[in-house]
Amino acid sequence: MNQAHFHLIVNHLPIIIPIIGLIIMISGFILRSEIVKRTAYGLFILGALCIIPALATGEGAEEIVERIPNISKSYIKQHEEMAETFAITSYILGGLSLIGLWANVKQKKISYIIEFPYVVFCLLMFLFV
Image (cartoon, rainbow, N blue to C red):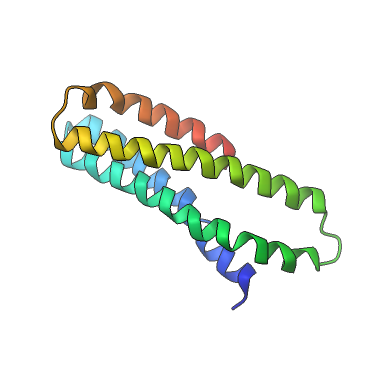
């Protein structure tokens, strides 16, 4: 297995995990379950951590893909820029989720205020996928 194969395996995790987290967070709203919401926060954090291997394997995959005939370097560059933007937004969501998880566990009043903006931010993050 080369870098391109490994990149294809790990680069879908930072996309799929927050989608599942978003569904679980919405379920937590509907069920009014704090445990379900905490699970969503954990998934947002895990999704942010999964960006690390995806970005780490990107350069190796790029070198392999550039050798394929008829592959435009502009597409590769565009993919790389969108991935970096997605990574930044994912890191922000992961960091904010740490705060949200802490507030939820400690039963702070702010946890109820910040839950909905997390969903909105997560939806906006998917614009970069």
